[in-house]
Image (cartoon, rainbow, N blue to C red):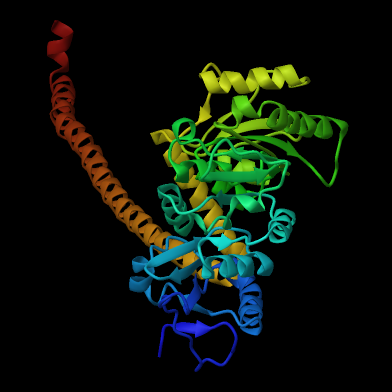
Length: 442
């Protein structure tokens, strides 16, 4: 029986083999899970719905799951480092899913990666339709060329993140003017930007940095993906459930900088806002007030906070420039102290997560070893205290015996000395009684 079990049929004897794609016509998608993982249990009903949706839509993707703790060798082969892990195999490539764990997002990921790396846009109507569907749209315009070959290779690698299209110049809207053909263009934020090899460097690097809108709402998954772009992330931390005037002002300032200063900061910064400070606090192992502005460097775990409240656009731009030129004070980092702190923090978080998801299992995993260790320590301490007490009793006995010996010796010595003194006094009395005349004569 295969180690993978189906997400569509709850019967334990039914299994689905997670297999790689053949010649682009078949494939599989699998979830690596651990029985004790709370996030895996939360994903289970979503994963069932994903399998049902893909099956009903006729998708070639076969959905399964595997206990990574029971098949650790296969988990290591696939590079699984945490649970749950979602992978899709296509040819010789294994694509990791890193987005939100919702049915729609996972299904969209599966359909995107399962299809061709580059999709054709044969007409203006199709082009307009795709423009309405996608916030960020990459399109290659032109015929066969070395640039197109690079584009196809790049798309096969980065399709895990977004869609890629190709079209002829006839599909271009009249409002779009390209400096030359062939060209790679990204449409986003109500505008379009053309790839320039001499200015932007490698095509993959440029696409990786441009695959997000200039400003967006950020959560934990998005922040993780933003870290792979190599950009610093400027975030307005706000509370959307309890919006205040200060929250709205900081959010507006971040949006203005993203739009009005794109030429200055787009290469190095990503802008957005985050609802709540829980994730940020766990990331920096500290406390960030709400509302506030923070800049994160996810590559080395450093972060920057403004030295004074940001009230104007000029102050925010000055703060961003200070981070860019290195004059702003960096906090956190990946030094030795921070690594030790992170290990302790993650260990505490893991223990708390296990106890929250399964208190009984948490007590067994952590309570039993602690109980055994406590009993061992108690036994050692008790044994040492008993031995010490016996030694003290022996010492007391020896001291008492010595005291008794010392008391006996003084009692005998005076007795021996008093004997001769008494005898001498008696002899004198007898002589006085026997010779009274001698005494008178004297």
